Image (tube, rainbow, N blue to C red; front, side, top):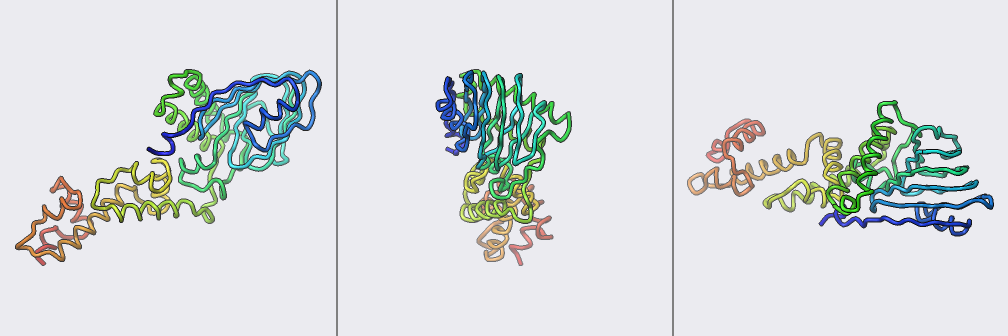
Length: 310
């Protein structure tokens, strides 16, 4: 079972009526959170729902709160429903009238009686989804959506996912929840222009190396893309992206090419009087012989029986 399937579901609501209790609640969302200032009227109600890849936190506060957050290992996308809010990300003020990204580093918020929502996304999970090393080499250049259309798409995606997370049966359905999380990942990457430094990011090549080593070790066995992704420690989508970016082919195309090479080696070494092309092809997983012959000719410029008789 993959790590995605084993994700632990979280759905917890807590309330704090004093600063110390509120700080403890905020640290459940962000380990590096601290309260710098508040007034006597302050209170916090907080609901966290999601899993280990993505958590949606809904905040309701009264009174004034000034908080600081050290953001490490994740990114947050926040949107304000109502109330007063000012926010800075890594020293730069962000526009709180639209969903805004809090990238790795530090954030400061000043709030007064707010209803707000923060989508927290683990960078390791997002990296597995994309096939990029976003933890070490991620680039988060935009705090706001790149276009109004992308902003609307992101908000509609979050609204849809929120309905799923609010339904206990859907939240605990692994396939539905994981598909919802993947939709948020895709929307967030495109909406805020998240990518990685291609010259420095090495996770893609390392993951592809793990994948190709697994393929080579198991070339004669049935291989699914999900099996290869698990060996590479990527999601299926992340694997596809990493292969295209690193090798310029899909994982399935790579497997077929390696099996064709194995067939050719066996044909060259075999006795034409004792072996048939069909036997060798089936040994390496090719069942549809006419299609196999077409791929073989494209790859090597000759028919497989010509190789066997050489």
